[in-house]
Amino acid sequence: MKVLLDSHAVYWWTIGSDRLSLTARSLIEDKANTILVSAVSFYELDNKMRLKKLDLKPQELRAAVSVSGLQTLAITDLHAELAAAFEWDHRDPWDRILAAQARLEHCALVSVDGAFDAVLHERVW
Image (tube, rainbow, N blue to C red; front, side, top):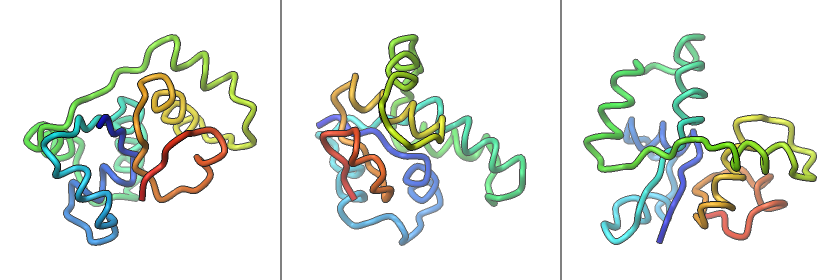
């Protein structure tokens, strides 16, 4: 199964938070799954770190993702095109990119955010 992690799921996984659901944790730990982290999540989390909203350094985040065997998913022009084209009230540009990537890459999205249900076939929490 291909799984794309929402930014909060990446962060909670990285710091070992119990805020990550058991279902999400099981999916990430299952070696049969391909776990993806979007480049947009690095941008969002780096921005929050810069604003001192998260207690983590960018290099710690990248090291944790690398050590865990998670794969980075680049943003393509097709992802951007679909993100802009969604008929969806949700205006968060980071979430729009994640939704487009999940749709085009045929991934389940691991997210606590039910807003994704309006545009995705599979959201897991």
